[in-house]
View 1 (tube, rainbow, N blue to C red):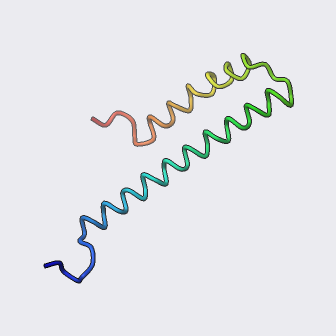
View 2 (view 1 turned 120 degrees about the horizontal axis):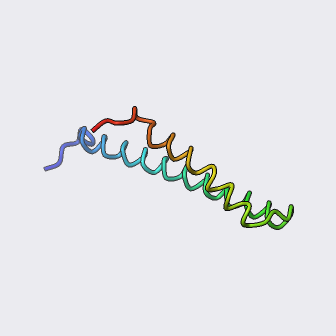
View 3 (view 1 turned 45 degrees about the vertical axis):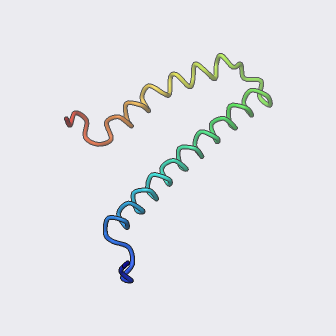
Length: 77
């Protein structure tokens, strides 16, 4: 027999974690789509060379990746 008191704490926590994961995925997806749109506009409307866009992406990726890797305090093992 099932209890009529609703979901258990573990089920509620699992749903909350799934919602957080989905939200994070949607944020990252939105950012990627916006970056691709900016690259497309820069290339075709402003005639920016693709090599310049790739160089700028690599130049920005390094510090951004360091920030994302260190957001939880760094060297916790």
